[in-house]
Image 1 (cartoon, helix red, strand yellow):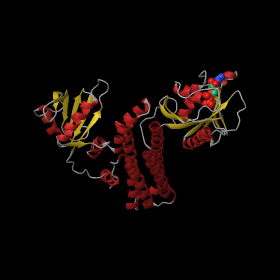
Image 2: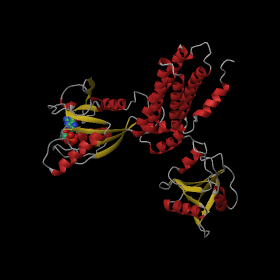
Image 3: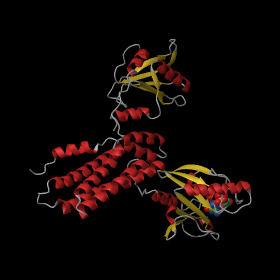
Image 4: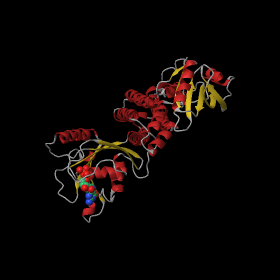
Length: 447
Ligand code: GDP
């Protein structure tokens, strides 16, 4: 973690824009925040007290009337002196209030700068700071709850717990190197094997949770493909719950690429509805088809729609693992809505028209994202976190082979250090050697 550079400036931003007739919040953070508050109030602000305040401009005219709250350092969101101005004016009045704060010595905050200062002052770790952004951008209620848990430190706590286990393992191995005369053969013992297995289990669970968390955050990008008129647009509308795409009985009506953001039982899903895939001479339509192919290549998953009541035509393309075949128009036959797991992938039989079988498709989509029944995801995570955990796991596996198979204690210890550093990147806080020192100090090698 970089050493916090001394902050000399005060930042200001509209933290919550005023809704229609609602309250807008303007936030200040930095060394001049309390002085600016004093100008507005005419006297020093009492800590954590809601002052009724008339906010005036340089000429003494009232901009707005609202509340002023001061949170002196370090008991604030950023760890610095923070002042919040709550105004009930229109956005133009909030903008005027912000201008006044700038006149009084603050500067406009960059995006994320309040959270960055909170991180630099040790109020939040990196994973928590990222969760703030994820909370704001959450694509579904479940994603928001997961981000809230990360912000609360759930993910960081688990990362730290794993870090402590790794350090203990490293200490154990280094002790074997430093005290080779000990009668126990550390490096081949069952004890060591068991310790590696325990750490690997925790890491495995954390990685699975982080992958789920990443899915909840990023959602799933799904392309709906198939021959014209099989019911692609109808399926999109049925999933979205309202009429978005134009549904007609004339093949080739969906010429454009439509994007729809859906909340599939907590999983944010972006569905791309594309022009029907078929050979055509119509210029506009061929452009649509070219775009459909590009979208399909970008999607995490392709829903290949076929008409259950007709010959299904050409088969779906792409790997079975990233494709679900949807047999639509089930209502035209007397078959049951169902899921089939076949060698060429998962097949769902449904009717976009009646809605029969739609819950099955939703379930399959959630499964594809790694979210099983009832598991909403424990915490939010990002690709960066998953990547760090994967590197941690790879280094752990190497360390294990070196310690247990080859008996190379030094190399194993070095790999464990690499594993621990990868973990440290997640929270940006853990310093491998610091933690190691602390544990070493309390570690008794037995005489
Ligand atoms: P697309 O060209 O693949 O997007 O197909 P559309 O969604 O435009 O649908 C083509 C036609 O099939 C329309 O007349 C729809 O009403 C009809 N259709 C779509 N889904 C179903 C279904 O589940 N059952 C029945 N009976 N008709 C459907």
